Length: 615
Ligand code: M6R
Image (cartoon, rainbow, N blue to C red; front, side, top):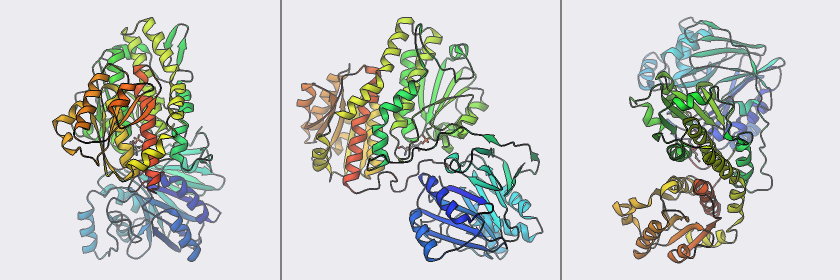
């Protein structure tokens, strides 16, 4: 979370910083700020609570100039999203500027020490200790880069930081400690940039130096010198990155999220491209740096993720168990990393993360690697940290997802895991040739089925919105492969409509949550024509018997489901393995239409960020 963007070169920095921050807004949008440095070294800071537009308006009212600068878009951790708590922060004397992504875990102790030494604080943030600590080291006689290095060594936690110093014009010092978001240096002609991720650098340059955890870069217009935080120089040659330009236009849709929901058939096609073989049938995952012998040797799979990616991982685990016949489970990455999990060389650990930057998922992945597990990252972001940490990567190929609430990356991550499960099943002999051929044919049907699900129900949403707009609590129920979809449906609704929703296994209802059922609590139930259809109908009856309205997401033409519910959203008949990917579509659209009708900012919902780089 939090986006950082910096520039040093011959041009006016402010417009470039604002452009960079706009591209990083998905990482947090509680406040934004920039610090500019004139060639003389003089610093000027402008910052404003709220979206980047507020900062741009402030810059018009109170212009500032400089050819070197840093900007920050914040997702608040310590301190409310106010002007005072916005980054950049400076030391008490205004000599050192810092922007920061992470949490200074020992800030109480550092702050007390600095206050005792006469350094005054003005904000409630943990970040403010950083420029003050750098200033303290400068006051002890260290050079600017050395002062930043020494300060960094005193910080606990994971961080990405960029600093500027009044007495060292045109120089940015960027560093990374642990996995709290990236720090990348972009190289242009006579100018350098610093950013949290590639998204922000792409309009400016393809020549990039990636800082690894424990490294810092002294950045000038002519390039950067990289060293470890112990002070050892590092050979870090720039890489030319091949990242597609962002298709960051809404293309006629009211919101990016709606556009992205409707892009799902296309994304589903991209995720299949080059991976399905029919003669002989097989899954071709040539991107993996190892062959079927490695997949054959694994005897257990652990799938890790957070939020929507965890819901996707739950499905991935079910696919692997069903198709590869090995024990497979999904786990919240943050819980996994703080246990002492039993994983070893025969365990396959799959980290699911659309951004490839989620701190908890990266730390869990690092733990798995240390334990000797085979590791695969499933991500939508080429060159992200997850791709650099895992042994192998399977890209989701969803295309850029701008909406903070994931939609197409959910579908493509699950789809990718379906193929991975097939590949493991084939390698282990759990799937014979006929089984694989069937899987290939099933997978190939996904884009069209998702397209059909999008085309159904168009008339139904306005009516459902009118009926449920004022409901403040929803329950989502599913069984089997649709249980993770109940969770995902509830998460989508919570994220963008700010209405409480709980998704669960339908059988769980009678063990407690049924107490919540009343006339104002709609239950959304996934009742597809599958082996658990009759059980789901019984669950719906129990809800209706208690006066709870039921919205069924059901297979087209299923009159039993229609009779058992008050409202219905239809999905096309589909193979059981694809049911979750088809049924999620009306759940996404329901959440979208409710949130839009409530007047919420669908693409940038309150309190959220697209990339969660703090623990
Ligand atoms: O980038 P990741 O997939 O690792 O992100 C994980 C979660 O933060 C993410 O899925 C979050 O729950 C989204 N807002 C879901 O819409």
